[in-house]
Image 1 (spheres, rainbow, N blue to C red):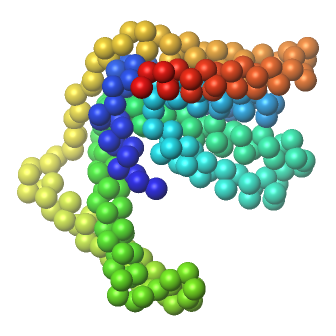
Image 2: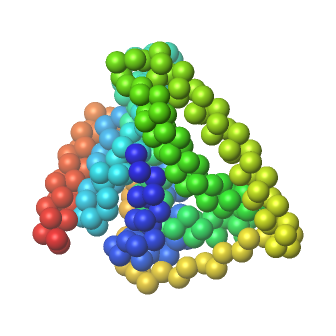
Length: 265
């Protein structure tokens, strides 16, 4: 997994969603997440996920990097489903909810520079919280590069391989211990640097203005439709058993998005 692909896509992307104002994308993401929370039919939430993927394909977003990130939560959801779900339908609902919620957040992060995500949030959160989030994001890339270097050094110096799982586990454990010590050192250095530069709280980020009014409207409308669909299927008994229609609509969006994305190349 290349975490730098996330930042690269967010900063250099030129799609309509990239050019949409960050507050509009945050509102749309919040609406979709609310839909995921309220939905009780696994087919409905699967349809929402397919529509999200189709939108990403149409906008030529880097789905080969996005989908693996969105699928990670499904591993934990599967464990939870096996442990606590009363039946296969509920288990499928857990997994589909996890994947759809993750795909929503991943889409937001791949189309919005991280500082711009928290620029609106800084207005309503304590200063320390906003600054900690910004610094944490920066540290992720430093630690990611450091961990890659450490693991590469372990493979080269120790000669570990998949055929020697015990030796590989021992060497990797030592490398992770070194990474933990490096993390403590990094945090102290960051603190010292901020103190020397006169930091007194408040890493301000200038909000970015969107240049795609259609993108903002489309994103919010999509979020509202997703929430309305989930509420309708939850509250209207007459819609029970018709969740497959949402899946079909999602599949149409996915196929159409893939064709549109290929044509735009």
